[in-house]
Image (cartoon, rainbow, N blue to C red):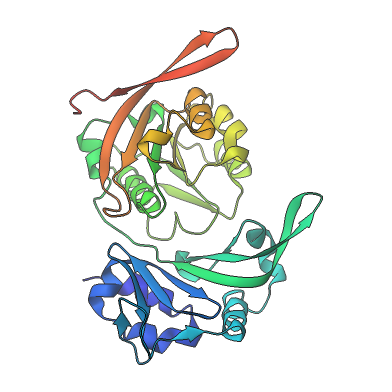
Length: 320
């Protein structure tokens, strides 16, 4: 069992580090985040659902006596520790609801939004912290190559939260960089939140950390001559950058929060697929089997009416 990722996350939470490090290896191995919420027990979430931290380091799978609970003051201390006691230096991240931590970790932050001109300026009255656990799963991206996906025309990876999208993308980038299934390819990785480039990606991968996706994409294309550009978690604000990428000469491999049934009904997914930047869609199985490829489909974009584009999804040849 590999518990190193969990232990690394635990070390980012000094208040509960010793108790978390004593959690059974079987729990550590399948955990994908650690959650602190004011007035509630410290919880660990994974493929098998939730469990709660006991005083002394054990876990319980239901609310019982003797659980480690996070008081509002402890939550405030944990937040300041995660910020390195410099909230101002993380202001931009907090506007988007997260903190970047050492070692490719990220903590989601919940609280009350402070608005300015209708936009989130900062957060106050922090109510919970969710520490995500980054993992390597070497070879999880191999089925993409073995089942014949053509990455040269771009690929959109769809999956629900905690389905392993970042882990899968990272493994695919590593395979291209090392030339495992074809000659080595020049890869640019846009790592806005400090997760996608958290591990060694090989000799041909250039990682741009902290760049917003539009700026990072422009920088990569101007200065790095990539053959393939990777980015994680596309949103509405990235649409124009994706449209530019469709005509850049580099393939775009990116992810989006969506299940297979969302691709045709969710406006963001429809617009992304109509850009022409993605020749293939890959869908992951879900949070119960993170990093597992479920389906591959080709994308055909056509003119449905004057000024209006549409797309058609077709299972890749050989796919069920």
